[in-house]
View 1 (cartoon, rainbow, N blue to C red):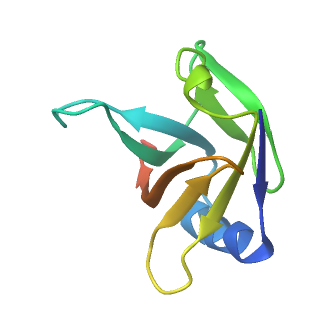
View 2 (tube, rainbow, N blue to C red; view 1 turned 120 degrees about the vertical axis):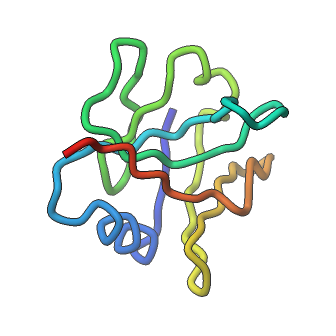
Length: 107
């Protein structure tokens, strides 16, 4: 899986990461949502044993091994310039146009 990002997306992701260490994870959160899941960009302290590192332009990005099949081989993450959200898409699919960052770091 390859994930591409433009410079404005890279900048916005770096702003969310800040000076604290961490990793990004593309994740369908199904806990307490009553649906098939809400796509989120998580900031985590460490990847889990079940996480797989994907090729990404700007950052270290992971997906859960079981969720990898839900995504296309080549993806794009695009920052919304006017709103604190991102669009996740491929050439053939729109996965979500309102992806939020959820900071799960403990430090």
